[in-house]
Image (cartoon, rainbow, N blue to C red; front, side, top):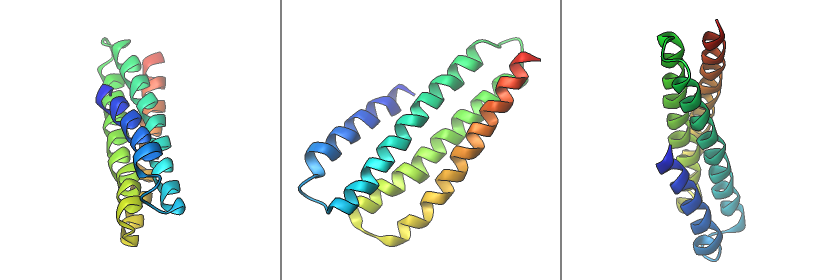
Length: 121
């Protein structure tokens, strides 16, 4: 979680200052989208940690929180990672990985919702 937070700030700064003059403006859109979604899901990882820490007496809820965190990380790798590579390499086949990451993100949010309801019951 902390490493992802560091990475998103570093990648955002690198994109804003280091890449701006090196890649096309439309490629910068890919980069910024990757950074934005990675940051949203760093917040999601924080929520996972918060939910898991508050329910040690409910192991099923903890498993759902851990599962959600794993799905968020996979989403970051596939969604944001493929957008970063797409921006840098212009290899269009990398665009096929983006929806896979989006599915991981969606499954992560569903898992987090299940965790939330398991915490309460």
